[in-house]
Amino acid sequence: MTKQEILNVLNDNYNLDIEDVSFLRKGGCMSYIVKSSYKKYLLKVISDAFMTTAIRSIGIQQYLIGQQFPVPKIMPGNNNQLYFWHNEQLFVLYEFIDGVEPSLDEDVGQIGQNVAKLHKVLKGYPDKLATHNKQFFVDRYIEILKKKHCETGKLNEYIEIGNGLWDSVKDLQYGFCHGDLYRGNLLKTAEGSIYFLDFDTSCLAPQLFDIAVICDTTDYFELSKKEFEHTTEIFHQFMKSYSDGNKELNFSIKQFYDFIVLRHFQLQATIVEIYGLDCIDEKFIDEQLEWIKDWRGMY
Image (cartoon, rainbow, N blue to C red; front, side, top):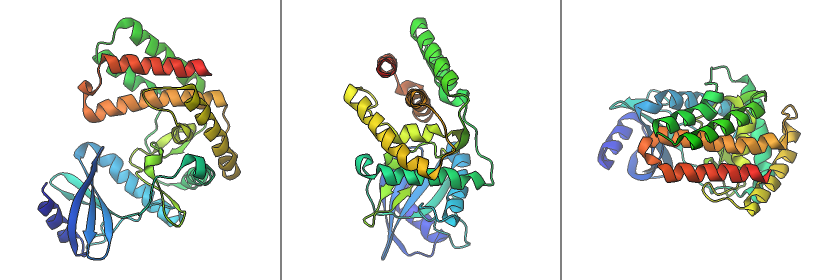
């Protein structure tokens, strides 16, 4: 869609006197900065492939707003609708939160408290969420490797590691998970509030999943001992504040380390689902296998 087309669609659906639209980024959806004469907003334009999860995320955010949890407000349209359809795409307009990614080293305590609150508050969420289990965390990627005709020896290594990892964590407590709780989905305002963004991948899963994602400070492609140690330090600091707000979650540090590896399995599969089978090659598959083996060797 052109800029003018987006402007026309927005002004047909909102009484906000919108004057400008600028592209922000592309991921699972297209995001834009929207400006009126007096305010900024964030627009998401979501394709048909992600409709179900996008609508679910709107319900979650509305629930969190009702619980006074820090998430961006969804702007109601002319008929108080929270989203609308145009050309088989879903449009959602949010208030714009002016902030920066928080620093884990400086803000880990506050983040831990907020994640504990998020997990507790959403125990009461009334609507159904997708349940993510071994199929989501391990088997999706194995199926992709088979489609890529991965060499048998490497494929068997991935299968053995994935099965072992899932055996380690399969009995952990399930509960609400944000599903993509990395620093890019947090914003810290000048006043010090930390907002949580993008609930499109929210699910029922072992809640250690969220903790592993937010505490992981490693480079996704190259691993060092220093990063392993930093991740471990962040984890211990995080858990001090998380445990103050949620004492019900029990797991070992080995299971935390195992979930960071599962995150690699899970994220590879998600990347391929978004960008297609050809977005990874044999070199990428080999390098990820070495990363996983190196990480596991450290603990």
